[in-house]
Each structure stands twice: as structure tokens, then as C-alpha cells.
Image 1 (cartoon, helix red, strand yellow):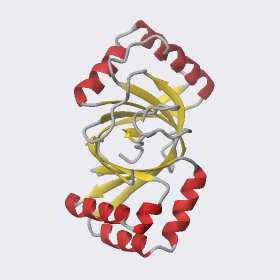
Image 2: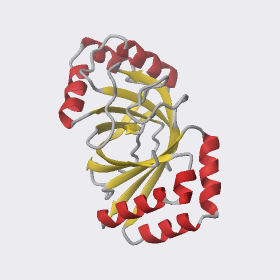
Image 3: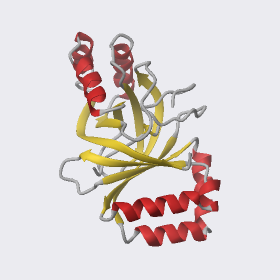
Length: 243
């Protein structure tokens, strides 16, 4: 799960001027944020700590929000959960950082969660606003998302091919969104393509429906030299905090 990502993703990422895989929540611009992959040893205690922080004065004044997801399939990585911290802008991210730096609530949260979870990795993301599917995206607990982690060497070619395919395929209720990854350690991941649905069945039906089309076959051919798939991960949304 080290190379994971989210929005909406809820995912985090609602439909509005911008549509993301389920996490935009009506924001006027594509969201940004950080996803933490975690090895959670005591889920109940971790959720209690999350709720306590976001119900505190610091949490209420935090300009962002958090989405907790469970890892359904993540390969050999030990991460069991992910938390996406989502902001409307990098300026809001800076505000949250400054707020937490001097907050007793944030310090108490850090101390508490150290006993129930450990960080496996962290990933910074930017929603690009590039979306496939015009159905109302799934939101809230139970939303399932498949993330394709990619190293894209030619973004212009990849995006052009993706948008051409997206203009003609049917997603059967699922919604797919593209995210840029400014920072993810040494994994080589530059972008994540996320497809989500209100259930595993909806997500997989939409994904397989796209993959069965001639448009998808053409897309794969066009981007063969422009991107490499590094890994995949599947998560299900458990809770959103700060909304």
C-alpha cells in the first residue's frame, strides 16, 4: 500500500464544478492533500482518537477533512488502512499545518495514535479534474475504489488518450478520476488513476465494462510507451471526519 493514493474518493474526493472519484465535496477547485498508509493494530482506538481530534476546537478550525479507508487488497505491503487529508488548496494545507503545530489537541492525537497505528508511507496528491463518467459519484461508507499507480513518462500523450476514451465509454455508475502525485518517496509513481463505485460490484462492473470496449483497447495501445503500471490497490471507505 506504500504507493497508494485517494479522493474522493468518497472517497474524498462530491460532484460539483469539479468531479472527483468521490472526494471533492463541492469544492470549487480540484483538491490536494496527503494520504497516509497505516498499519492499524487497534482500529477501535484509532477511530476514537480520530473522532476526538476532529471534534476538538482544533479539528473544528482545520480547513481540511479526513477520510478513513480500509485496505481490501494491497499486495504484500503491511498497511491495513489509509487516511486521506484533503484540502481545497495548498494555502489551506499550510493553515492546517500551522494550526496543528501549536495545538494541544493535535499533540494529544499524535500521542494517542502512536499506540494504535504506525505509518507505513505517505503520499502527496493533486486532483487533476480529469474524470471519466458523468453519473453522480458514490460517497460515504461502503464506497469502493481501485487505484492504478503509474509512472507516466509522457503526460500529454496519456491525458489526450484518456480523454478521448472517456468521451465515448459507458461506466455503468462508476466514476474514474486522475490524480497527479508530486511526492511519493522513491516509488517512481507520478500519477494515480482511481475508479470508484458505491459497492465492489458497481466498481468492478464499471471497470470491466470499460476494459471490454474497443476504445479501451485503443487507449492501451496509444499509451503503451507513455506509462507503466507500478501497482494496484483496492480500498473501501469507512468514515469521513471534519465535514
